[in-house]
Image 1 (cartoon, rainbow, N blue to C red):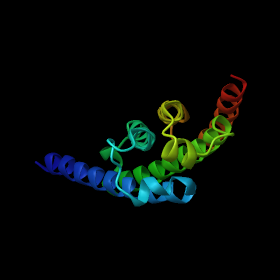
Image 2 (tube, one colour; image 1 turned 180 degrees about the vertical axis):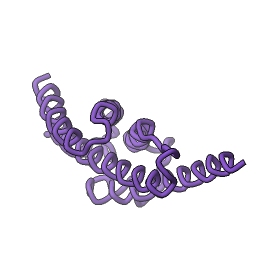
Image 3 (tube, rainbow, N blue to C red; image 1 turned 90 degrees about the vertical axis):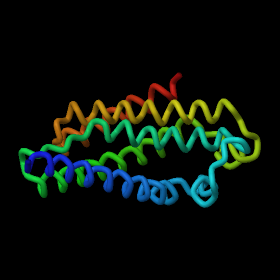
Image 4 (cartoon, one colour; image 1 turned 120 degrees about the vertical axis):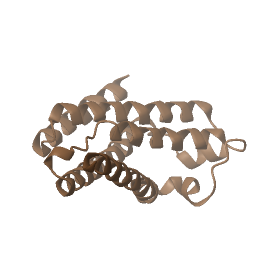
Amino acid sequence: MSEIFDKLLIRFIFTFYICLSYFVFKYAHFIFYPTHRHQILKKLTPSSNYIDTLTFFGRVIGVGIIYSALEFNEYIGMAFSTIHFFIWSTIGISTYLLTLLVTDFIIFQKYRFSEEVQKKKNDAYGIVSFTNAIGVAIILKQLFLVSQYSIIKYLVLWFLIMCLYGASTRLY
């Protein structure tokens, strides 16, 4: 019977943390991307500007992809599992935002988000931004799985992946 309550408690903690992290992600996105303030401060309406909505939801889906790599192991204890999940999800979200910041600078070097998405409603910019966000999330998900929750392996591989991904997108 206690296993059922443990699983229920784990689901409550996981759901609460996911909701909290999306709220924190929203405002961290505000800090890392000051040009995207329109996405944070106003409602997203797909009928008025679907490209703006597409770019933001690409990043939200990316966070979901990163969370799919994280584990919540109850055999090591509830408190330690919660702390472990909190630390690695924070590392994942922060490296995701930093990677998106760098790759967006490399890919969209000559373009500004406020002009292309909010004024011109450029379809190509939105689709490339959406696929970049999902591609970076898939790469970071595999990075979590390969590094086996070692921070040194994770940082070394992250720097290597950043160099390779940035060079490949720039040279293409």
